[in-house]
Every structure is written in C-alpha cells, then in structure tokens.
Image (cartoon, rainbow, N blue to C red; front, side, top):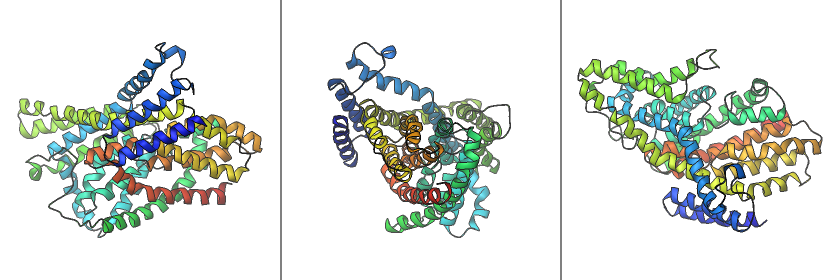
Length: 459
C-alpha cells in the first residue's frame, strides 16, 4: 500500500509540473528518481538485480537511467534518429513538395479534408501490419503522409492526431505484445492474429476512422482553425529549399523509397531478405544524394548537404529520444517500487468473474499504459499472471489475455508521454499534450467499441 501512496503522490506532482510547462524531461526524470529513491529507502523492492548492480543502491538508481538510455539509443532511438535525419533531408531537397505536386490533382477531387484524413488513417492501418513500431511508423508517416495532408487542407493538429493513432492496436505477427499474448495463450502468433486480432481490428478500425473525421473536425472548429495555403505547417526546424518550386517531379518517389524497402523486404511479403528501418533510411538518403548530384552537378556542395541528415538525427536525440528515456525512467520507478505489482495482485485476488475481470483488468492496463506511456511495460508486467487468473476462474487463457492486449494499446496512444506522440510532436514543433488531446477521444471510442465487440462475439 505504501508503494501505491508514494506513486500516486509522485504522479500528481509530475503531472502538475508538466501542465505548468516545466521542462518535461526534467519532470519525468524527477518522478522516476524519487520513486527509485523511495524504493531503496523504504525497502519496497530491488532497484537492480545483483548481476547488473554497482553494489551500491544509490548508484544503481542512476544506472537504471543509463542502461535505459543505452538500450534506447541503440534500438528505437537510432530508428527515430535515422527517420528524423531522412525527414530533414527530404525537406531540404524539396521531395515533400514534389510528392504533393504529383498527388495534387487526384487529392483535389476529394472535396472534404476530413474524408481525406479518414482515407489516410485507413492507409496507415495497412502499413501498421508491416511496421510493428508505433513510434517508427508514426515518423514514417510524418515523412510521407503528413506533408500531403497539411498541403491538402488538413490542419496540422488533425494530421498529428491521426498519425498518433497510426498503430492504435499492437496488431500483426511483428508486434511484441501480440507475440507475448500468443505465447501466454499457448498458440501460434499467426493463429492469434488471424482468428482473434484481425476481425476485431478491422471492425474497430472502421469505427475509429469515422470517429477521427468527426472529432478532428470538431476540434478544428472549436480552436478556430482555417486553412491558409500561404501558411502551411512544416516540420519544426525544417525549411524547404529555395528550389522547392522547381523540384523535379521524379523527386516524389524519394519519401516513398523507405516504405517500399521495409514492406517489400519483410517476412509478411515473403522475402528472405530483411530490411530494418535504419538501413532503409540510410539507403534512401544515399539515393536522394545521387539525385542531387545528377541535378546540380556540384559534388562538394551536395556532399556537404549530408550535414542536414546528421542535424536531423541530433534534433531527434535531444528532443525526442531523451524524452522517451525519461518517460521510461518514470515507468521503471513505478514497476520497481512495487506499485504496479500491488495493483495487479489486487486485481488478481479480487475474486471476480470473467466479465468483471475483463473490465477491471482492461481499465487497469489502460490506465497503467497511459501513465507509463508504454504498452509493452504495462502488458509485459501483467501478462505472466494471466494463466493463474484464468485457472482460478476456470476459463481459457485467451479469454483474458486477448482483451487485455487490445485495451493496453488504447491507453498508450492516449498518453502524452508515449514515444510516438513525443516523436511526432517534436518534429512538428508542438506539445505532445496537444496531440494527446486529439488522440484521446478516438481511443475512448475504440475502447468502448472493442468492449462491445468482445462481449458480443468472443465472450
């Protein structure tokens, strides 16, 4: 109980600091530090296991942050940095504008920008099957769909709200949560995806698509937004080159090359070759440089422009990766202090029936993912307890693990400290709280719709 009280107080303070405009990385780091400090002082849990400890718990608190930073920089962080660098270079060469010019005529046939927004959301859901990273997919969409949308009359915040929901469900064989759920349920991941995830995913996606069109229009009207073609939102810190208006239309293929590489060279596409995000971004940037060499024939100047790629990477490291690591440091404090375990054990020992446990556990996971900004952290902490819970109630494991895996995604997408929301808001130069405001209502609708479908079809 002490861990819950401490966690509640710390979270209130952190939220207050964030709402008051404090530097978010510092606020999140402060929260994680206090939680881990209390874990040590009050003996609430183990800060680090013995094999990775410094042999002094006071130092271990900082090692938790260092280990998290190292893990993120060489994994998701490097992916985000590579995408950020590629995005910066695309703006420089005018590829985003060329892409819009190619699609300008067909897009003009769609009179309502909100119908265009809904269509873009459906496209993003197809891509989500091939790109299992929420943040990675969101940044890919920032390079491709975002410029098209804002130039076609969709507001910046509506576009960000849609992109923030790009992977609103961890669906597909490549998803970590999907694999974890299938493993706990004792079934093949493809079977879990096809027979359980896919039918619900398709139905809820259509509902969320319509919800986006309605909700984003309502927000735009409430905030007094009107489309001004002379004042189109671009990526923060990026300026299209002076040659933008004269950019050859062949440049329109450049932003699409990474998507082609990632999708075509994947297990889903049946290829034996595997293409990761970082490699795809580097290859695509080199292709863009070749285009620039042919266009300008100034080797020294074109080679010098590669500096923009590294500047884009640095910007993502400073503004995005650091914020994600700080958020995960707070999540580590919540887990290691025992606050998460206390909540989970309370739910496990409540003695409710299946329906009550689905609702209670779903709400708990939704809330934990929202607070942590991570669906993986919440779900991976909860999933190992599900088999015993199912055995106690005398129900198949899949009856519990499936709704839990679905609900946890909605909480993550609603969180202003979720990695994807932080990444896209940083690129657009807005607050992640503004983006979360645009994703929250669609995710509440998705939660309710998923609950109705589950109890009507799977229960």
